[in-house]
Amino acid sequence: MNSETDSPVPQAPVVASGRRVKIIGVGTAGTVMVDQLPREEFPATRFAYINTDSSAPVGCTQQLLLDTTTVRGLGTGGDPERGRRLAEEHFAAVKALCEETDVVFLVTGLGGGAGTGVSPVLARAARESGALVLAFVSLPFDCEGQRRQQQAQHGLEQLKRTCDGVICLPNQKAFKLLPANASFLDTFRASSRLLLDGLRGVWRLLMHRGIIEIHFEELCALLRERHGETHFATVESAGATRAADLWEKLRAHPLLDEGQAFAGAESVLVSVLGGPDLSMAEVNRLTQDVQQHCPQARLILGAAVDAQFGDRLAVTLFATRSRPADAAPSSAAATAQVESAAEFGAELLHPSEVERPKNRMLPPAPTLTVEQRETIISQHTGKPARTRKPGIGPRMRQTTLPLDIVNKGRFEKSEPTIHKGEDLDLPTYVRRGVALN
Image 1: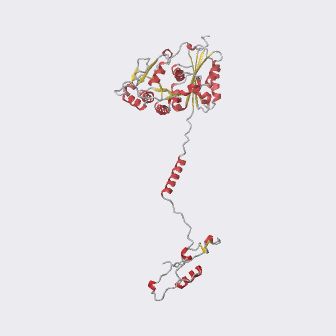
Image 2 (image 1 turned 30 degrees about the horizontal axis):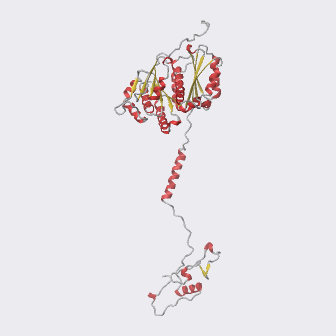
Image 3 (image 1 turned 90 degrees about the vertical axis):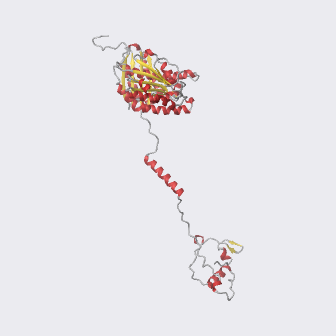
């Protein structure tokens, strides 16, 4: 290299000065995952744990055990509400754990009691202390049951409201990287490795000064705006074809849904970290592949050099997209449904009167005399009308109602119903000559 014409390339990892980072494992799952991180890969970084179970393994001295006389170091029993109450009772100690820190990496597994209940309280305490909070969380396997799944989703929503960014890994996606006969322990280790790779990539992005630098605020804005729909992956490769190999690994990565995360992405952040032999052609190829698959996305590029990387090349990628709109009815449609339901209910409670057809038997005006009525009856029945004995006064005389038959309406042309010589269409009192009072 010509020192007079070429720009100097850093030969050692350069950690951003003055940026204080702390990685905190929450609950048993978070404690186990943070214990797997090699401390030598994270210089100038502090580690801590928060738990409610005193029997959980710890690999560092800074540990906060949330304990009371009722819990007695035995954990929360899988109850997130109990974990939240413990964290609130010890809020001052939780907040003190985050003091003099610029960035808090919160690592936990959701679904249980401590991780789900304590993590949102820790995030709130860290933000009140002035720190940026990035949460790296895992969701339960499907086989862990519906109760843990529901608790994990509830805890995830709470973290989204309290953290600056949430990077979420469903453990079920780890199956895509393992053979069908993989052991139970290997499956959990693979899931933890995927989540910690994402943490490692973000730590490199924040801590290494880049030739093309991604500003701290850009990462915060990216994760804060669409963290609920953020897909991430960290991959590494070496050799002459490492740039091409990296893109193929990204396309097949399970955390990127095998390339489907690029469809509809609004923003894509690409952070490249390589050794002194990192070339501009490799960076160009990676960015061109990304833009080809999501041309509408806003691209944020970062590139840094680390002499310890040698011939390795690492890429950390975040793809964010808008949350799909809920399939809820519009306000007008909802109002119409409510009004319709109200009308239906009112109809059931207060049924409307149905207009009935008029009766075809209409009484005529009482203008006929008794003799005339008896004549009409005898004509219809063919029997002589009943005669009354003389001497009976008018007060004792029986009278009949002035009823008569009018037209049959729409049954006028219908054949009469004759049974044993009687027309059954006529009223009984007419057929039998019964005088009505």
